[in-house]
Length: 412
Image (cartoon, rainbow, N blue to C red; front, top):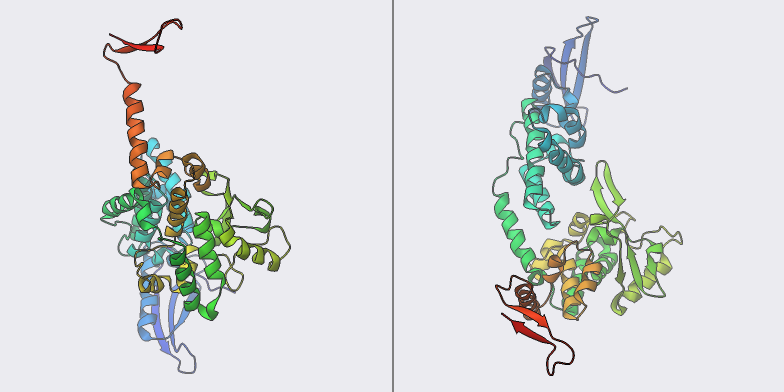
């Protein structure tokens, strides 16, 4: 039977008892009188040290005296945020509520909503903000999302759940500018060639527990398909066409309250991705050894779990491996930059590259073109814009077909 929480606002009496026969020898206890029945009730917690016991009592006393349920401190952010949403958003105009609520639903909850309120630190929020930027959300979108998070965490401060609002981060605009600079030249983030990719994959496998070869397959597959790690995790048997050697990319694994889930791709864009000969053997092998269920995952962790960028990083000691190989700034998402850069250099037409990448804007795809080629394209666009603009009295006249020479001439 779960222990009962003190009613809101009651006065607590406290004590700590040392019981050496238990692994956690310090029993912290709070007692109170029930305001309805008059009965004396209590709740206790075992701790390893007396300091932990004192901290537990302090937290119980502070939360109860401020009118917040003692369970709030360990409540997931999603649950807490929903419970205080109206308080947090009070005073806002209706036109502001929609982007704030969208930021909560589409970005905050998937990224950090599963964490307990007290586990949401400055560092957690910094990484969440950078993730939103890397996903190419606009500056105003990130600003509204962060503003929403500030309001929820400020309510947690007022409730006494936390002491300082960790969402009041500074310098995120500079981080945004840095990410924008990187995205302006994503080619600079790519691995140079296949040998570099192979060394990376081999190095990650060697550093993983049990030298699990699946990590190398994930890395090679992600780079050669220009896919995100979550999209690689979402590949199912039925998505792979072994006759045409294509991948029907239609889902990704992402974080959500309570764990991981599979959902549609970013922007809900379903796309067909070629599987080049360099990775067909590993794909064929996996298709032969995994379950025959059409929904069986092609790539999993060593225990069959779903893969995320954080799982890949931790399981392979990614940061240490890339530093050792001389790619200290390489992130998991840069495998996608690698694939798109290689495809652009191979001469894949821009409109085809855009479909493979799933980009919403052609301008995003153009960043992967070689600088010389991009300059030529931009020069052509500038000329086209010039010719289609105002002529200031100069124009073109269609000349009858029996006129000798050109069929167009300048008129003033």
